[in-house]
Length: 160
Ligand SMILES: Nc1ccn([C@@H]2O[C@H](COP(=O)(O)O)[C@@H](O)[C@H]2O)c(=O)n1
Ligand SMILES: C[C@@]1(CO)OP(=O)(O)OP(=O)(O)OC[C@H]1O
Image 1 (cartoon, rainbow, N blue to C red):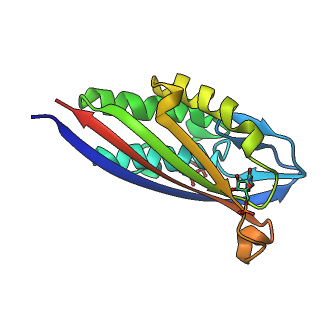
Image 2: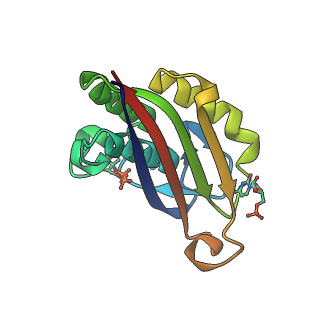
């Protein structure tokens, strides 16, 4: 009998003026960008945590410590590839991924097709199995003040 598991991931990063803004492997043109130890790709981090959670394989910080110089400035597409390898070692296949980005600006919608291409390539799945959505926080709280960006992701994984 085949097994399916769901996973949930969340991530948040500070936004800093003049910092590059990488989201879903795409460089966004904006006055500020996400700050972190890696490239701070909040969407990919939420997806990594959803996948790791579904497979009961701890979390992104466990596998990629922010004290480890190997991961400084690294593209999170590479981290996603590592995560997918960890799942493959346990015979898990990804069913689908659904993600939500909470960000006041810039607009994410025009970049979603390119993000799907990057994620599909890194994860070895079809773009049709990846959903990415965005919302503002209606100008409220730290997201509304453009101090930070948040992403949530859920996924389904399966194995025989
Ligand atoms: N950073 C964002 C935020 C939102 N969108 C799109 O705009 C729509 C309206 O957003 P509200 O928060 O005002 O409801 C939303 O449904 C998204 O399609 C976006 O592209 N980028
Ligand atoms: C990805 C890692 C590792 O470079 O660093 P950050 O870019 O700071 O991202 P975070 O979402 O805090 O997750 C885990 C980290 O260990």
